[in-house]
Structure formats: C-alpha cells, structure tokens
Length: 290
Image (cartoon, rainbow, N blue to C red; front, top):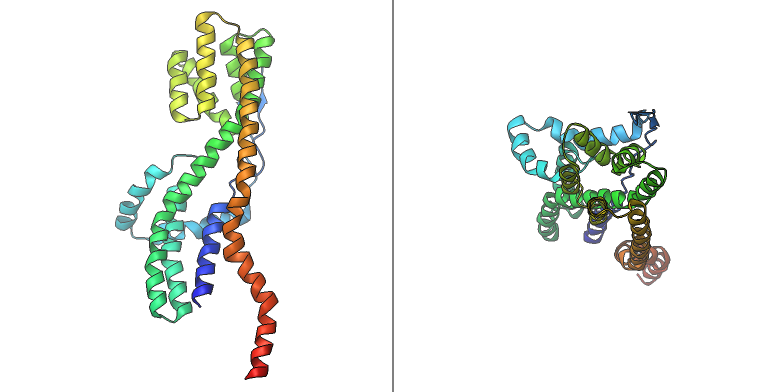
C-alpha cells in the first residue's frame, strides 16, 4: 500500500510538472492589419473540456468562506505574474493536493503508522505546489517570449530595409509579432503614442518582460540610433547571434532530457514492468509452494 500511495503521489507530481501550457492556447489570434497598423482580433473558440477542468480546479476557491479565502488568496496574488496563471487555479490546485493526497494515502494504508508519517509530507507538498506551478509557468512563458524574438527581429530587419524608420518598423513588427511577445510590444507602442519617450518605454518593456535577449535587442536599437549606426546592420548581427544562442539552448535541453526521464523511469515505469513480468511467475510459484 505504501508503494501504491507513493507511486500515486509521484504520478500527480510529474503530471503537474509535465503538463505543457500551449502559448498561444488553442486557435491562435488572427490579426489583420490596416494601413495604419491597427489590429482586429478574433477570439478563439471555447474548449468544453478545458472549461470543465477549470471549473473543477476552481471549485475550492468558490466554496471557501470569503474571510478565509481572501486571507489565503493574498499570499497567492504575487505568484500570478504571467498570463494564464490565476489566483483561482493556484488556490484550487493547492487545496486539492493538500487535502486529497493525504486523505488518499490514509485511506489506502488504513491509517497505519507509515500513512500517518507520509500524510504530513504530502500536505506540505500541497502547500508548496502553487509556488512550484507559478515558477514553472513563468519560466515557460518567458521561454516562449524568447522563442518569438528571432522572428520579430527578422521582421524589424525587413521593415528597416524597406525604408521605414525605427518607430514605424517597431509599430509594424509589434502588431505582427507572435504571441506572447506581441502584446508586450503593442503596449510599448501605445505608451510611445501617448507621449512616453522611446527610452522610457523600452525600459518599462524590459521590466515587464525580463528576458535578457529582449533587453539586449532594445539596448542595441537605442545605441545604434544614438550613435548613428546602421539599424539594418545591428538587426542583422542580432538575428544571427540570437539564432546561434537559441540553437545552443536547444542542444543543452536535448542533453538534459535523459536525466529528466530517469526519475519517471525508475519510480513509475520500471516497477510496473517488474510487476507485469515477474509478478505472475512469483505468484504461481508461491501458490505451488504453499
């Protein structure tokens, strides 16, 4: 029973770590540009299965008393730093794991001593789960922003070669940039249009989206314009460097893949394979002996 409970807990843990968040989700936004660079968005179609899962996940938040809910939610709000991560979902995930896993372990072990020892550990894991999920989603969101930079740099390079200045090229590239980088750039364009200087708008963009490659691109554009260097040459060098850096990152991630597969292989796949292959023979041998 202890092994079954531990395997179930590890399965849920790896499920939360391995659940991929698609950026953008579902059907991507369809952006149609007019002559002035304005955009018209078409919302994605609703997904019933995702709605059901969200309703189930947010159920603890809905049924918790308001005073207790607000007290707990105040600690979760700082964790919702990227789109798609809501207070309701983090609250629900923490409650389901904090209460569900210890209860399942206690029931499976018949309230044995080992189950009573393992239950507080699983409850502590449930309390830490919102932070783990938030850190994972933020890392993936910033990685998606980093992955959209090469295409955006290429568009800026094409617009500059087409004869547009930096403001015009940045505005056009902002409305054509893929998600999730596009909304950040569009907000920066609006700030410049409302009177902010380009330096202030770029600094706010770097603060909102702390990606080293994006900050490097913005700083290179400002320095090139300030010193009178060619924007096209600057963008060409940046595009080449970011693609080489992206290739190295993918190679590094591929080298780490076998190590990440080791834990599920040892704790989940290997025990099931042993039970399926050796289990029937062992049972038949024991029945013959006894």
